[in-house]
Length: 146
Image (cartoon, rainbow, N blue to C red; front, side):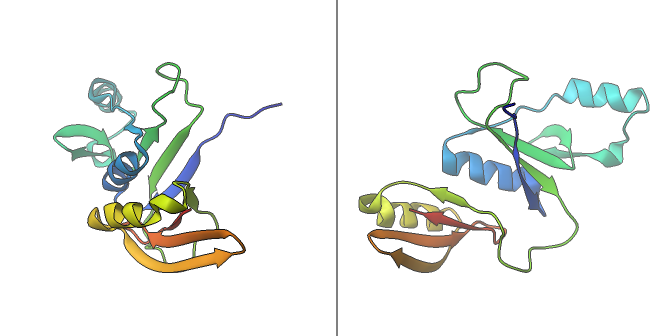
């Protein structure tokens, strides 16, 4: 059996972090459906406290997702990253991280681009012929440019 799955990232501000990663990866923020959210509130299945406004639009407070640009159709999500609201901030190293493979010749340009957008440089690494740069996203989640 082949599973469809998503990667879930804990976040203090899921909508802002989803925006950041969507731009970083060239993916799209999954569209919100304010009409559906409002219907859930009107039917008593959700409350106003379950929502927030992001970029002028009603959204679920608990999370935001980004989708690969080649997703086949609305509702079919084979490549999806969900940013989920959690009450605690990040305190230790990630157990899972993203590697953005750009090629060694592009490391420095990507480092500049990402730090200009709010990433933090952490360190450089090398093992044999492979090298990478470790950064942190705006909430401190480590990732590598390889």
